[in-house]
Image (cartoon, rainbow, N blue to C red; front, side, top):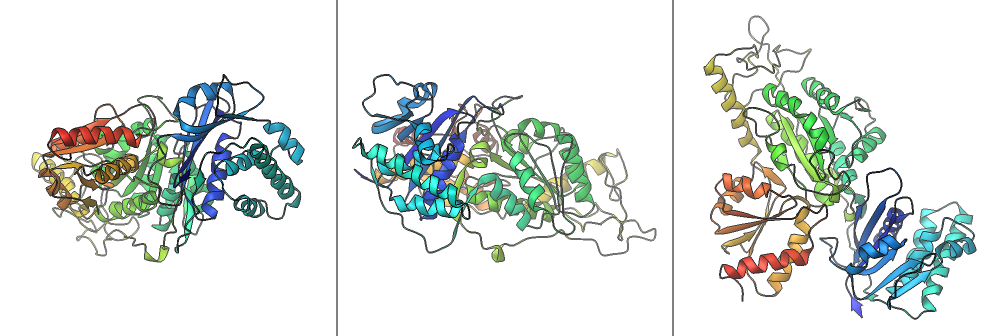
Length: 567
């Protein structure tokens, strides 16, 4: 059977090499020109517990993790019982022959440890698996041989052992005459690509945008951002360090922002909750900074290593009082890179805090994307006060209705960066006219951020689909499937959730219905859109896992047909 697509899931316990196997397959496939996309989910303990990863490979662009499995690699019996039902008809279960499976016609036991030892390297069991998988989908052996030679360059003994393990795995399957698909050859793109995870792409974007200061506290699934910054934010005038709490994170980046530096931290839901008072101060004192919230299941500790899109309300309205923060939510690994750039630019432009809402499924996802051309990245710096202040050297920092130049401590323009309501100098005041004036100033600055881009298609249709964040991929797969069936829907998407691009907002208000797929119980973005005058309806899921495209396809089809669209 010829196919354009191939999905394999590795399942077992943490520490069995499940993540390594998935990443290894993705790297080998990406090296020869395939498009790849991975997904990982694991328990919160350091070692052990049910873990699974998934790799999707195709010669064409991939938008989602895939609905069904061509191959399940089960490294223990629990993994088999948990995942076997998701193997499609004609698919195959590969299992470690150390344990026995129930009667299963399309199953193949492999003595992984024995073959690895025969290869001369006990740690090469994953390469035995790669050989087995390569034969099952007719991937040429040289794809993996080149990968092994490059990955272990200079370590000839390891290269020899892994090449033997690869061959042993292929021969073991060849002897069974079992086969799954014939994966079409890759179409290597003319442009350069990079295989990267969402957290790393987001971090790279921030460094590219001129980040000066990073402070962070370890928390799943945002910790890789801290680790990246500690390794890479090391130039002159750049600082990255681990703090003792999320409260120290937010206050540290506020201090850096006040001092004129581009500053950022990354956290997850529980840490973001601790930052709300600091975000209120950043809004009130108008201090530029960026907070990345890599969403996970909640509330409380919740599902710390599962994915969700349930922090949108708290991102928009994190503090007490009248606050509504700018929010950017990337939907792909590539968008993660540009989201952090846009967030730092927005923070500098409007002089205030900006929230980036990533999510676990993006953070841990590996995907090959076009290599960003750093020479084309546009970065912005805040408008800095260059005057002399009044006769006493003081500066009316908050005088203008919308924005005023930012004074840097130690330079001209002394003022008070006050968390209390203040007058134009920043001095505390409780007079009603100043509270009205300053509240309107803080909100009016958001108009400076209405330049976000958006996608649109088939805009004349009265019913629209508008996902956000990581739900973009499966929603787009579902949309494309319905379009091929002649079912008409409009498509809209943007990672700039607030403020929405002005033209996009106007188009959404004209629709009879806007369907919003989102991974939360409350339908948060749909609710927000309704408050802004859009007839939005949420399609929700809160399993800790991404949408399946076919589930969204069924809902989109039903809603379109019930409103008179399609056939």
